Amino acid sequence: MTPLIPEARANVHLIDHPLVQHKLSLMRNKEASTNSFRRLLNELSSLMAYEVTRDMALQDVQIETPLETMNAKMIDGKKLVFVSILRAGNGILDGVLSVVPGARVGHIGLYRDPMTLQAVEYYFKMPKNMEERDIVVVDPMLATGNSAAAAVARLKECKPKSIKFLCLLTCPEGINTMYKEHPDVQIFTAAIDRELNSHGYILPGLGDAGDRIFGTQ
Ligand code: URA
Image (cartoon, rainbow, N blue to C red; front, side):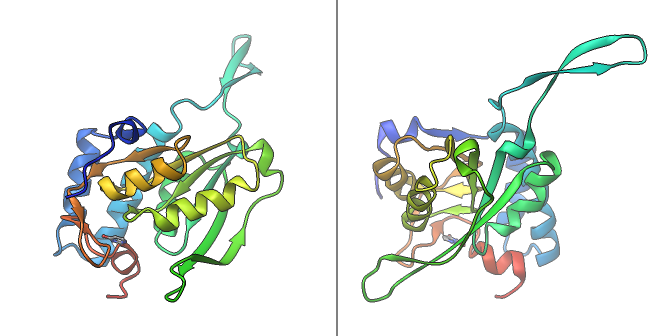
């Protein structure tokens, strides 16, 4: 088993709310149907969105209540970009956008070249003015961490204000990789599982998240 680097662990926000833990356990069950897996992922993603947006800046906006004028606090959702790592990241988008409907969305697609083992980008589409925006990268599984770290490196070329990483599940290997390559990136997750198997799957995990979301097993 790979030991978790203590400094890397300090970058991880474990979302241990009972509702999050309960829904995650339902998703892990191999008997969960595609329909319920997707619905649970939606619900979990909205709950996790509360945690990942906890430090979002607020601005004072003057509004009229039925009784008087006041300076009310509001967030500018359009400054936030959720970046989905294709394809499983798309399963998180509906849930997080139900909580922050004004956020923008980017997509990044990477595959690992079997010869060089390097991450090769096949799709990259981001909103304009990324240097004014905070990014939350979404992918249900932070497993080896290699494609996640490559996605973050590519996104840093856009010079965003900040980058966070939101996943359902991770493991020591994924956390260590992200920390070694991007010690500035905070990880938000519902669980840190035991280890990776030799095929790069998280144990005990929940299987292939993309297949379970899209019913392609
Ligand atoms: N990706 C998945 O979908 N599941 C894993 O366990 C690891 C990577």
